[in-house]
Length: 269
Image 1: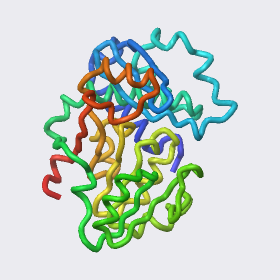
Image 2: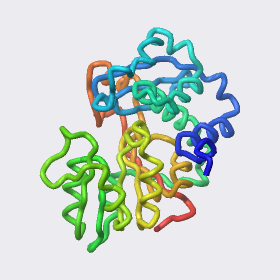
Image 3: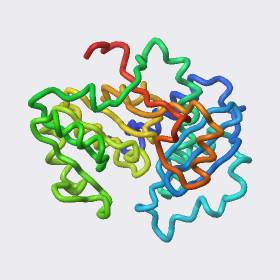
Image 4: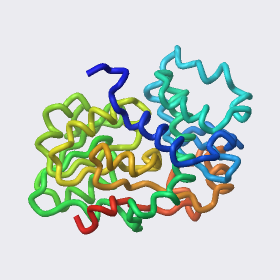
């Protein structure tokens, strides 16, 4: 298959947003904050998108965004979101946050395709006897899943986040196809691994994207095989952006709520 024509989560999300938001070219960037833990993009329409500030994968050459500093709010939201296609990691972080903000604008157009519920995704997916793989060492979730699963594998890309029993993410090719349930961190959208991880998970009964960075259009993720998306919905944009600017992380107390998106066509799955 021609790699340039291969469908990707980011590419499909940009296409879906342009098709679903007739006024997308008029939506501007109101503010961009690149915090220690999270990056936030706020749009002129009020929506906020979040992305993990993935400093562990930055390189000395990740400077394309730095050269544009001070001018990002001069861009349209769509132009900023297209940075999610870049291979400069800082650009991808900001682009993903912008993509997530635009996705919030579009969700009201998807009500017939998406079921929304509240709560912790770890309470909903695993059955007794399941083999579970978690991509990204999300410790509190791992502990909760391990109490229910027959076997749990944790794959982690960043050396500093690996603990005893954690496998490198290169084990994905062998481990994920054996799994009944797969949970993938939203940061896979930033580091460009999401498409392969979704492909490897095609035989899983349940496949979820997890975390604030997974705020991309859930319908696109469903089209790529996900059965659930567990992310956050911003309820207080001012508080979230202030928290980010002061180096805060999630859950941004009293400023977001946990939401789970499921495809309406597979209700009760």
